[in-house]
Image (cartoon, rainbow, N blue to C red; front, side):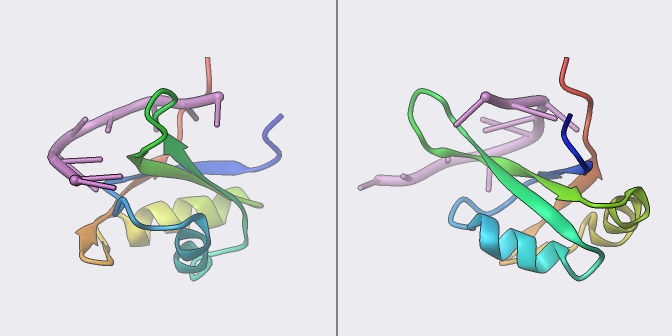
Length: 85
DNA sequence: CCTGAGCGT
């Protein structure tokens, strides 16, 4: 039970924080959670994250409008997240 | 220092 609609965010700058990402994605809807994915062994960011919205239409809008958008000098890859199997 | 495709502790 994730409680929201997750969006995959690839090609994120390594120095970006969850707060920055959340602020950026809040332009398209109500962000309820941001999770940067870290390498479990080295602890370094893996360069992508998941942004969770409270509603699906905001998630879909973020995908449509923020995929390819410039964020701190990087072109973001935004897509609907897969289900965790 | 620490990179560059990636769907997650």
